Image (cartoon, rainbow, N blue to C red; front, side):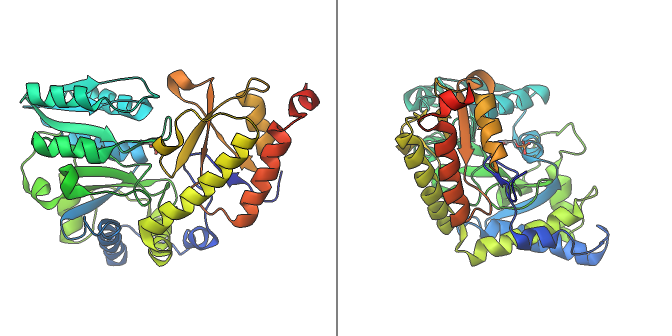
Amino acid sequence: MPERTILLNPGPVTLSARVRSALARGDWCHREPEFAALVQDINQRLAAVYADLAGRFDAVLMTGSGTAAVEAMLATFAARDSRTLVVANGVYGERMTAILAAHGRPHEVLGGDWTAAVDLGALERRLAGDPGIRQVAVVHHETTTGRLTDLDAIGALCRRYDAGLLLDAVSSFGAERIDAAAWNLKALAGTANKCLHGVAGLSFVLAERSVWAEPGPAVGSLYFDLRSYHRAQQAEGYSPFTQAVQVAFALDEALREHAEAGGWQQRRRLYRERAGRIHQELTKLGVPALLPEADYSCVLRSYRVPAWTDYARLHAELKARGFVIYAGQGRLSPAIFRIAVMGDIGAGDLERLEVALGAVLGPGAATTAS
Ligand SMILES: Cc1ncc(COP(=O)(O)O)c(C=O)c1O
């Protein structure tokens, strides 16, 4: 095995030494005041990642992966007496649809080609023609392809037609811009182990204070009823169920690193730089991107598996050199591979990656492996 393995999958990420050592901070009980204080502090700092959210949105921390936060957000806030329109252009949009169906919430879907931008005209027609749609659920960064959704346009429509935005920000929170007021944002779901560079196991939901104050629909789930978390965490910092204590230590440290390094703007700049370098190398090697360059988030890009190799071979050969890439998902599964740039990746790692890509995909690669 290589000395150091770099995760280029979209989370969990390669940990920094600081975050990894925070995991060993100690044995704390989740029902002791020091842990309750830590949860309140983390919640404050999650909201403070975006100046626009601080003071207007309250966070709740929950144990579970990103899907748990998305499910809890929809279970707690998607109405029963009006409809939620899901904008679905990838696996995670489809997952929100499946969650709404599982929770028996009235919903509709605006689907489309996974490689195309959201059809804004169709979205406006749906919102304008149907006052029964009161919420729109969107994935900020559709990790299936790497597309950054045009939230400025979608959010403006949400404002115009007074539909609350429920946002899956699982793979964007901490690195892409969020403009809560302009987008009519009511709530978003995020996770510790992607752009924030924490460890998998904790996720969170941020919702506008007025939204927490509403009675909301009957949730129909004990674990996913976020109002019970909100009440308890706001009051004293305790949670209804056992939290992942050591994962919270790691998130605490990861948030400190995030702030010290210049917040989401600097993280976006860093990711763009990394992604741009990898893109240049792959373009040189003749590997085509799935989407136009301007459509990608800073976090991840998707590429077509070139004709002279296949995904399994590409993955294995890069892994042997210390890099874990990610397969396509759903209907794009055999045709594409993905490279994310989150986590503790240094200049030396990027240089090694360029060499590895050249060795695995460059001239002669097809013949040496066959
Ligand atoms: C946009 C988005 N939403 C939700 C999820 C689900 O997160 P998890 O796998 O942590 O449940 C992911 C995971 O990659 C994601 O990228």
